[in-house]
Length: 124
Image 1 (cartoon, rainbow, N blue to C red):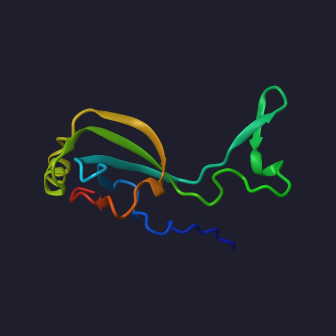
Image 2 (image 1 turned 135 degrees about the vertical axis):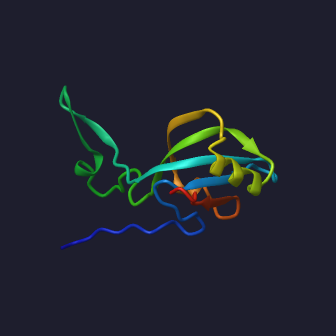
């Protein structure tokens, strides 16, 4: 059995489905909270004929396909932000994060260890 593995990018967070990402804004700003819905590997699709799509990598000769070996996160973003990590964690545990926006797909490298922390809820 051949198992394909990907590695987390150097300097990025390590997370899994159901985790919360607490990310401090630029310049020591407020904390934004995201929930990890899934971790995915993307493949660009290109038109093939009139009604079909194929993966870009099947038609490339020597070019590297877009998104190859990149880890992306499917996220839900919450609209409240917080002054401290402790305040954000209390809000996660209380389920008091405000309105949600689902469907964000972001490269995990947008969450460096220098500004992001993973939190696993006690109920997870």
